Amino acid sequence: MSTKKWLLLLALGLALCFGLVALAVVVFLMWPMGRPADLLLPVYSMEQIDSSHPGYRRTTITSGTNVYVNDYEENALIAFGSDTNAVGRTPVAGGTFCAIDGQKPTAYVVEMGEMGPEGVYRNIHEPPFPFRTATFQKMRFAALLGPAANKESTDPTLIADVLATLRDGTPSKPSSYIVGSLTNVYGLYLFSDQLSGMVYCAGVYMDHTGPVYLSENQASTRWIQASPRFATWSQTK
Image (cartoon, rainbow, N blue to C red; front, side, top):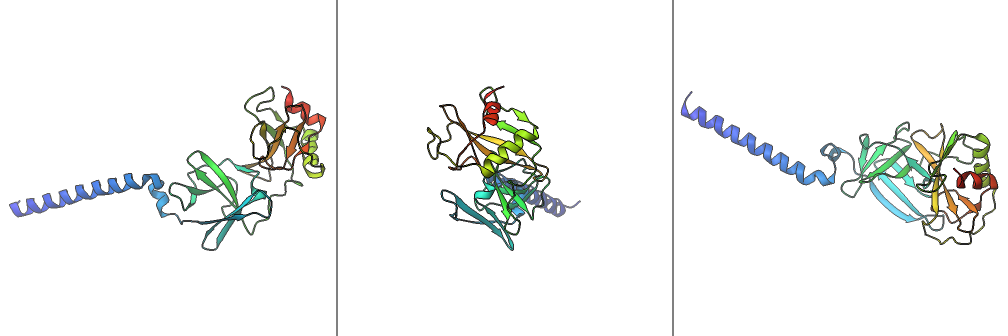
């Protein structure tokens, strides 16, 4: 092989090496923005305004004709999803919107942050989840401490009791509750076959004076005193 051909092959080899190094640098620098494959996903614009529900914000995300909303009704929804089924990117680098296992991405998506699933967004053409009339098969008290921590029940009577309190109970202000405080506020996960890949999370407030209160979500300020039956269940092993 002539010297000229050797030099040409050498030049091509060096160019290929430099190209690979350049590609590696680009991927390294853009990695904080998400996985390389995510960079090909559509970016959802985001708009936030005051909700019609006092104390809440209404967040809308849009990509083309796809519009989703996170408002009061979605505040209680928690998704157990995976970040491997991304369908879009957040305006802020590093975040993605993912499909939820068991749900059509045209109905719901979940925002995935560094710590895992965050807010659930509902397509504006889908009705809010009707928790008041839904059928729930199980509930779990999502407290990390105390005698009833992570306690579960499939008792239909007890679950119906909780739903009746949320649906028909009269709001009353707990004596020690401070608006915006997370102290003594816990989640009550309600599992339904009608809510694949998600749970409905009601709020539970344990007043230091003894009574137990329920709310439609953990951020709500509309608390309703729970029945003695549920209060006993949530305070005993």
